[in-house]
Image 1 (cartoon, rainbow, N blue to C red):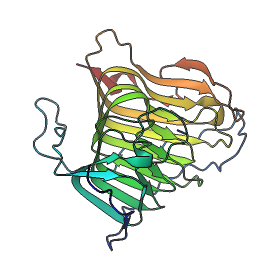
Image 2: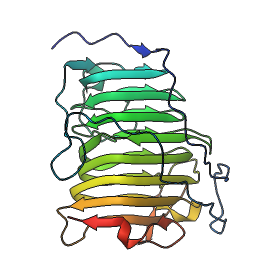
Image 3: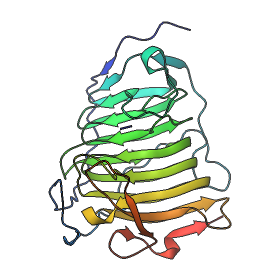
Image 4: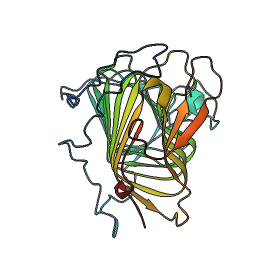
Length: 293
């Protein structure tokens, strides 16, 4: 951001109902220039009832699912648009043709674009993965795996403060920059997820032309070094990151930043860092919520 014959541009339109988004909603409305002194609403709860499906047996000693073996290969030459629910049956999808580049440039098209309320599940994204997955409104990603993250694994673009995005299960690795990019409004929940070899697990857009107050909930995430930052939020726009059950492996010197606060802007300039660590306002967690192995 920002072979075989390719498939026709499929649109998922099964009758299965999309997952219902959590009911807790931050009260702030989107704004292009929120006040730095605005009262921050109570963060959404990290608890939820949906359980991520496990693929195979859990990895030894972690309780997390093993990385899955693809059941088939499917090249994607134009974005797959998803409405309702799309079950990929653990096929590996990879870009080809116009989506076959491997660059980190902003503005790339995604392999999957999810309509408001859509669900994508049981999908493996191989390389090249273009710009991964785009959610245009509330969405649910269940058991989705990124073997080699392209520009971003997924971008969340809903414009309503009530938008809810859920990432349940799955994992991502080899992300030179961001895994999850939050450009729109609303709340992203990441649960039962694993990530390794990455720049940032989550970033609230630091210099988008239209800025919003954004919220992140992280619960039960396995992090394997190297990794730079788990959560990057814009403190001046009232963003929050609530973290619990974070397990970091292979970082004995604790170099991975758990939560970093930035001063975001809407001018396109590089945002400046305001500090890191729990502060009771933007970065909401305790030392005991993060363990090292």
